[in-house]
Amino acid sequence: KGIGCHSGHINRTHDVFVWRWCQQMTTNLPILGEEPTLRSCEGQIWDRVNGYRWWKEELQRNEGGLERFSKGYRQFGFCQSQEGALVFREWLPNAKQAFLIGEFNSWQNSVPLTSEGFGRWSCILASPLLRHGCQVRVRLETHEGTWIDRVPSWIRKTSQDA
Image 1 (cartoon, rainbow, N blue to C red):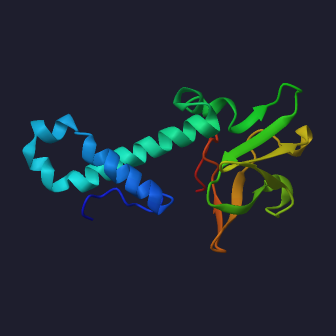
Image 2: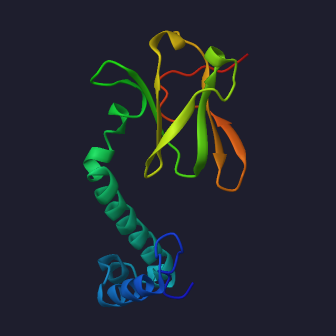
Protein backbone atom coordinates (compact mmCIF):
# COMPACT_ATOMS: atom_id res chain seq x y z
CA LYS A 1 0.00 0.00 0.00
CA GLY A 2 2.95 2.37 0.05
CA ILE A 3 2.24 5.41 2.18
CA GLY A 4 -1.10 3.91 3.02
CA CYS A 5 -3.53 6.82 3.17
CA HIS A 6 -5.41 5.98 0.00
CA SER A 7 -8.39 3.97 1.24
CA GLY A 8 -11.32 4.93 -0.99
CA HIS A 9 -13.79 5.30 1.87
CA ILE A 10 -11.56 7.80 3.63
CA ASN A 11 -10.31 9.96 0.76
CA ARG A 12 -13.11 11.07 -1.55
CA THR A 13 -11.04 12.81 -4.22
CA HIS A 14 -7.50 12.96 -5.53
CA ASP A 15 -7.08 16.41 -3.94
CA VAL A 16 -8.03 15.03 -0.53
CA PHE A 17 -5.60 12.16 -1.05
CA VAL A 18 -2.76 14.58 -1.85
CA TRP A 19 -3.67 16.80 1.12
CA ARG A 20 -3.73 13.86 3.53
CA TRP A 21 -0.50 12.43 2.09
CA CYS A 22 1.23 15.79 2.59
CA GLN A 23 -0.24 16.13 6.08
CA GLN A 24 0.96 12.64 6.90
CA MET A 25 4.49 13.35 5.66
CA THR A 26 4.77 16.43 7.90
CA THR A 27 3.23 14.78 10.96
CA ASN A 28 5.22 12.27 12.95
CA LEU A 29 3.60 9.66 15.09
CA PRO A 30 5.60 9.30 18.33
CA ILE A 31 4.95 5.56 18.40
CA LEU A 32 7.03 5.12 15.25
CA GLY A 33 10.05 6.61 17.02
CA GLU A 34 9.46 4.61 20.18
CA GLU A 35 8.93 1.30 18.41
CA PRO A 36 11.05 1.10 15.22
CA THR A 37 9.64 -2.32 14.27
CA LEU A 38 6.36 -0.56 13.44
CA ARG A 39 7.97 1.33 10.53
CA SER A 40 7.16 -1.60 8.25
CA CYS A 41 3.47 -1.11 9.13
CA GLU A 42 3.49 2.68 8.85
CA GLY A 43 1.06 2.68 5.91
CA GLN A 44 -1.53 0.62 7.79
CA ILE A 45 -1.10 2.75 10.91
CA TRP A 46 -1.72 5.91 8.88
CA ASP A 47 -4.78 4.28 7.29
CA ARG A 48 -6.20 3.79 10.76
CA VAL A 49 -5.24 7.27 11.96
CA ASN A 50 -6.79 8.85 8.88
CA GLY A 51 -9.85 6.61 9.19
CA TYR A 52 -10.30 7.71 12.77
CA ARG A 53 -9.92 11.37 11.78
CA TRP A 54 -12.41 10.97 8.93
CA TRP A 55 -15.04 9.37 11.17
CA LYS A 56 -14.44 11.94 13.89
CA GLU A 57 -15.10 14.71 11.36
CA GLU A 58 -18.21 12.91 10.02
CA LEU A 59 -19.61 12.45 13.52
CA GLN A 60 -18.93 16.08 14.35
CA ARG A 61 -20.66 17.26 11.18
CA ASN A 62 -23.61 14.86 11.20
CA GLU A 63 -24.15 13.93 14.84
CA GLY A 64 -22.88 16.89 16.87
CA GLY A 65 -19.71 15.15 18.02
CA LEU A 66 -18.51 11.88 19.48
CA GLU A 67 -20.05 12.46 22.92
CA ARG A 68 -23.53 13.06 21.49
CA PHE A 69 -23.14 10.08 19.15
CA SER A 70 -22.18 7.88 22.12
CA LYS A 71 -25.63 8.53 23.60
CA GLY A 72 -27.37 6.90 20.66
CA TYR A 73 -29.38 4.69 22.99
CA ARG A 74 -31.52 7.76 23.69
CA GLN A 75 -32.71 7.99 20.09
CA PHE A 76 -32.17 4.55 18.51
CA GLY A 77 -34.31 1.47 18.94
CA PHE A 78 -37.82 1.90 20.33
CA CYS A 79 -38.15 5.26 22.06
CA GLN A 80 -40.96 7.55 23.03
CA SER A 81 -40.92 10.97 21.38
CA GLN A 82 -41.56 14.17 23.33
CA GLU A 83 -45.08 14.12 21.87
CA GLY A 84 -45.64 10.63 23.29
CA ALA A 85 -45.46 8.69 20.02
CA LEU A 86 -43.57 5.40 19.77
CA VAL A 87 -40.64 5.88 17.39
CA PHE A 88 -38.37 3.18 16.01
CA ARG A 89 -34.99 4.34 14.70
CA GLU A 90 -32.07 2.29 13.36
CA TRP A 91 -28.68 3.09 11.82
CA LEU A 92 -28.58 1.39 8.41
CA PRO A 93 -25.88 3.12 6.35
CA ASN A 94 -26.03 0.63 3.47
CA ALA A 95 -29.82 0.56 3.12
CA LYS A 96 -31.63 1.49 -0.06
CA GLN A 97 -34.96 0.87 1.68
CA ALA A 98 -35.96 -0.63 5.02
CA PHE A 99 -39.00 -2.03 6.85
CA LEU A 100 -39.88 -2.99 10.40
CA ILE A 101 -41.31 -6.50 10.28
CA GLY A 102 -42.46 -8.97 12.89
CA GLU A 103 -45.29 -10.89 14.46
CA PHE A 104 -47.33 -7.69 14.63
CA ASN A 105 -47.59 -7.49 10.81
CA SER A 106 -47.16 -11.17 9.84
CA TRP A 107 -43.58 -10.43 8.72
CA GLN A 108 -44.78 -8.29 5.80
CA ASN A 109 -43.17 -5.13 4.40
CA SER A 110 -46.06 -2.98 5.63
CA VAL A 111 -44.16 -0.64 7.99
CA PRO A 112 -41.59 1.27 5.93
CA LEU A 113 -38.77 3.18 7.55
CA THR A 114 -37.96 6.66 6.24
CA SER A 115 -34.40 7.81 5.67
CA GLU A 116 -33.37 10.72 7.91
CA GLY A 117 -29.90 11.01 6.35
CA PHE A 118 -26.46 9.86 7.56
CA GLY A 119 -27.67 6.25 7.68
CA ARG A 120 -30.55 6.89 10.11
CA TRP A 121 -33.93 5.35 9.31
CA SER A 122 -37.11 5.65 11.38
CA CYS A 123 -40.85 5.18 11.59
CA ILE A 124 -43.60 6.26 13.97
CA LEU A 125 -45.72 3.37 15.23
CA ALA A 126 -49.28 3.18 16.41
CA SER A 127 -49.04 2.23 20.09
CA PRO A 128 -51.38 -0.79 20.02
CA LEU A 129 -49.50 -2.15 16.99
CA LEU A 130 -46.80 -3.77 19.15
CA ARG A 131 -47.25 -5.82 22.25
CA HIS A 132 -44.53 -6.41 24.82
CA GLY A 133 -42.32 -9.34 23.86
CA CYS A 134 -43.37 -9.62 20.21
CA GLN A 135 -40.67 -10.63 17.75
CA VAL A 136 -39.36 -7.98 15.35
CA ARG A 137 -36.67 -7.66 12.70
CA VAL A 138 -35.43 -4.99 10.34
CA ARG A 139 -35.67 -5.95 6.67
CA LEU A 140 -33.46 -3.91 4.41
CA GLU A 141 -32.47 -3.83 0.79
CA THR A 142 -28.85 -2.89 0.22
CA HIS A 143 -27.72 -0.66 -2.62
CA GLU A 144 -26.48 -3.84 -4.31
CA GLY A 145 -30.03 -5.26 -4.30
CA THR A 146 -29.55 -7.86 -1.54
CA TRP A 147 -32.37 -8.26 1.00
CA ILE A 148 -31.37 -8.85 4.64
CA ASP A 149 -33.50 -9.56 7.72
CA ARG A 150 -31.74 -8.82 11.00
CA VAL A 151 -32.33 -8.20 14.66
CA PRO A 152 -32.36 -4.44 15.32
CA SER A 153 -29.00 -3.23 16.64
CA TRP A 154 -30.55 -1.22 19.46
CA ILE A 155 -33.07 -3.82 20.64
CA ARG A 156 -33.09 -4.10 24.43
CA LYS A 157 -34.18 -7.73 24.80
CA THR A 158 -33.61 -10.73 22.57
CA SER A 159 -34.28 -14.44 22.79
CA GLN A 160 -33.27 -17.42 20.71
CA ASP A 161 -35.84 -19.76 19.22
CA ALA A 162 -35.56 -23.31 20.51
